[in-house]
Image 1 (tube, rainbow, N blue to C red):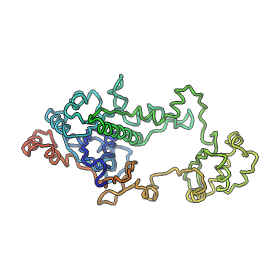
Image 2 (tube, rainbow, N blue to C red):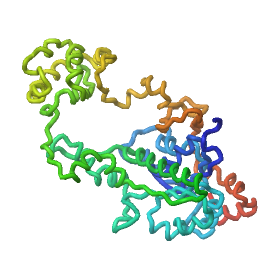
Image 3 (cartoon, rainbow, N blue to C red):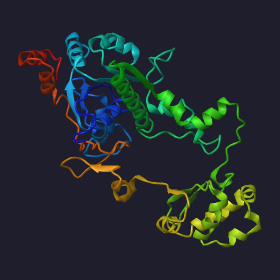
Image 4 (tube, rainbow, N blue to C red):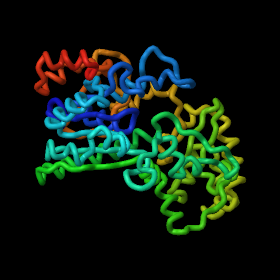
Length: 401
């Protein structure tokens, strides 16, 4: 299908930072016409992320490039009644409205679902929050590091031991999977609309997605399961579901869940056939009982060769393993390029990260570089039916940038 499965779908991205806007990005990847609403002047504060202390230094605004590709920017001051009236006019012609304003802010601006839905009965209104839209924390601000990573238990669960300092999440680590949840909610509502002709309000939040991400162990706790004390890597209970350091300092992780079948092949790939007949490790129970001893042996084995050599030895032998990737690998990862995980911007050699969904027969849009603040303001307003005189007045009053 040419021009994307969502060609003709109109989307308003009235949100900031990552999770909610990234859901709009995926809709745009499949052809939707996405209008980014941002305040005149500096625009969405997320534009400034790469300027914060500790972030990589680049001539490119890499954060904005990823989240706002294929979008059009309308600089609109929603603090003014005239700006809110412009937004309401746009909503009348819109299929999907996305926001991550807290409920109290939506009420103050007059852009709640209850206020916008009567303007357009087919509207899919998608709201995203940190901690949900009910209860004492409904208006509590939060980023994925707080509400997704820390609140859900993930920040604690990844610690090697109870004494290890909790690890910080990286930028957008929770936001991007949360964006896919919101995207799924939107598409589900669009399917409902196809069947009923009616729009609806869909919701998601960081906290819920974080608990979903930690769901296996979270469900175990809800079932009052008995947890075992955490053990450092060198004392893990299973040596063949562990990670090992290679001679060049790179790491890899092995995951032999079908251990009885895979153990002999694994030992042969390591050049340690003697371990197959070693009575200390003859059965799965033996290997688990002596896991610390086996880990020490495997540590010594993996330290004899570089990561590239181990990959050659293990590939194609039914051994489940993975490279502990580093960002320096990306430019040279042919598998990611072959599968369109990394794709170039249109008319540019710079690569970007594709949304992780593909649909046969529906090509995605070639990613276009993101807009400047208000770059498409006049175009968007004219398409909405505003006269040039109106637009000129909006600019003079500061409603439109």
